[in-house]
Image 1 (cartoon, helix red, strand yellow):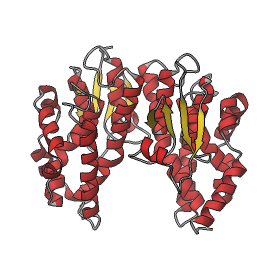
Image 2 (image 1 turned 120 degrees about the vertical axis):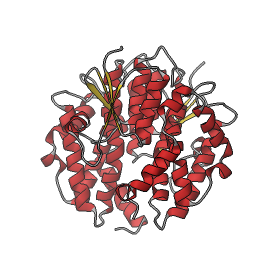
Image 3 (image 1 turned 30 degrees about the vertical axis):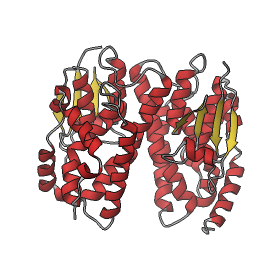
Image 4 (image 1 turned 120 degrees about the horizontal axis):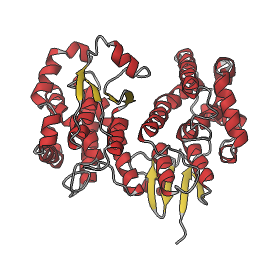
Length: 219
Length: 218
């Protein structure tokens, strides 16, 4: 039986990009359905009634929500190639720890930077601290996953499409503070088609945010 | 697989209780090191430099942090007894989802209730809604894990030790709104592995009264 795989998506979402990278890495054919987050479809509300958020992966009619949970599901089901998680329990726990760290920090900090309110300066500092911590974890490795990308790479790299937006809105340079991390992001995009296919151009994200700010009357 | 197991603990923490529940379910011997959270020691700061929080599991000298990650690690290393997560990928994803739902809601709502601020009423309503949603997920099953305790049971059960504190500080009854969930708590507590790992709610309430200021109650 052929698998039916559908992704409920929103193209600027870093969380949705994670799933697209994983599906690309595993060579999975899927249907991508774009959602309007200001006018959520009945399908989205039915498939993710609890959070009503994207991404949602629908595999043979069964929904899976929450991007890191989706990544781990994909990794388990399509385990024939490109493993995202190590098989050793300790190394696996460390991958999940750092993916969780990224989840706890990045979205909120990035949002506070592009929203441009009183807490922007604090958010900029927190971003640099967070990225420096991640640089420390990367160390001398090519990727967080070691010789090839893993869960942590997939969890983090989508946020790098938002760096240009942060820099423009916050008037600072991320590369100046975290050159290793910026180099890592470039390496991911250059060496992995699944990454370059999933990530929109940073300027597209910036244009989207400008429009969003107007809509939210934040411009 | 065996080897030295140490848990950096704080007895009243629902997050630490998750680790203790998992260790207890699996029958794993471990050394429990109570931490002073107002005066964190070098062992904790070294074992968890990123978050500086308990619980931390130290297994053969290596640290694992974040309670649900610890529970998963325990489940994977001691996989031969009392599995907490299903092996089926879809059922596993659902268990992770519901544990994440507990993670996203219960602690924060409970805290908003016991610190007794202006948003207490809203927090009470939301907590009841969340617990009702979890009741629906439990359905007719004995445990969230099915016939035995599973990952979601371990994630949620510790917060039941704080129910009396939420109820008393918020002047409401969880039993009234969520009798099925309270019945599930009682069913779990009948198991020796659970009653050994969890403190009595009265002790948690006494702790709350003693340490109100440190807990953020104005």
